Amino acid sequence: VVLLLRGGLASTAVAPMEVFAAAGVLWNKLADQETRPLFKVQTASISGDAVEPDGPLSLVPVRSIASIRKVDLILVPATGLALDQLLARHGELVPWLQRWHRRGAAIAGVCSGVALLAEAGLLDGKPATTHWGLAEIYAKKYPRVDWRPEQFITDAGNVYCGGGVYASLDLSLYLVEP
Image (cartoon, rainbow, N blue to C red; front, side):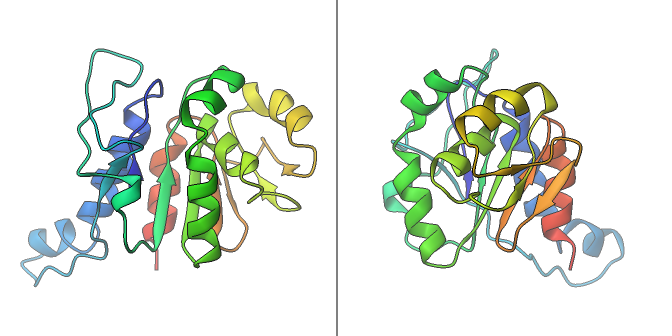
């Protein structure tokens, strides 16, 4: 499930959707081989309604988070820079992420979206990264996290983080890699 959230950057959701949807398909088509999709990509917003990221675009999800019945991987995109606004706007995701993590789903966050993973306690005692410009703010708010802003990607078992906005591509490719 790739989350679509208000106030973030659309590319941090759209690029992962494209990477996941192409895995096992695009190269196979080019090589004239049978396609074997590695992911069944779903999109969801908190309410299931269209969201407006930061920019002149509207994204329409397939479903709401409440309608998700099975998921192996959740990707949380960038969600805006103001931490208090981010948490107020998307706070409903915190217990939802906790629940899916307890059920064994892998959780990945990119840039400012990593704050929702930290708020859920999923990063406590684990290495995590985010955009270097946010790292000091997040370190003060979430001191139990082992912040490593110099790293582009962190892998803490089934919790993954990507640094800045365009790290969403690198993180997605990392998650696709066998």
